[in-house]
Length: 176
Image 1 (cartoon, helix red, strand yellow):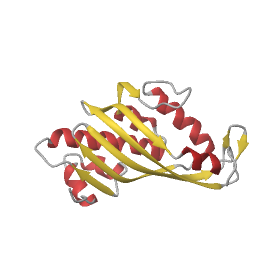
Image 2 (cartoon, one colour):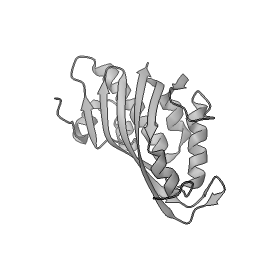
Image 3 (cartoon, one colour):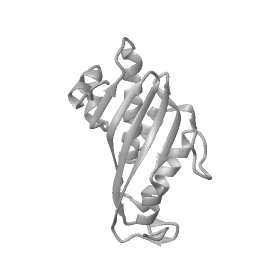
């Protein structure tokens, strides 16, 4: 078993770009596959951190830097557009409901050309969602993403979100 590498090790991973380390979301726990492929590993970590920062801030610059032009969402929800514009539109729509959305990376596991992220998203429902007006209700849900990174950019993404919890918090489904 590989022991978790804490954020201090992450600074070493990204030492060639100190400005990046200061502005991107950092995982609480980072687990890296050992081996000689440091350049590939660094590229996967950087792409994953850029994409997490996009979800944390809503700034499309991070998504454009993270996603390959031919990006494929392997598990799209109904109606999601393929390519980089899919996540950009999804973020825009969701931030209309939860403008203060944040995204924390609880843990990131990197092996070969893949990154697996356990994400925790939080905010407050103060906007609108499917005709419902929020009143500041807290929103908190988790997601797990798997990225395949090619040439330093995410080429494919498989994701699972706790949509049942989210939809209940937004009032779109009854609570139990």
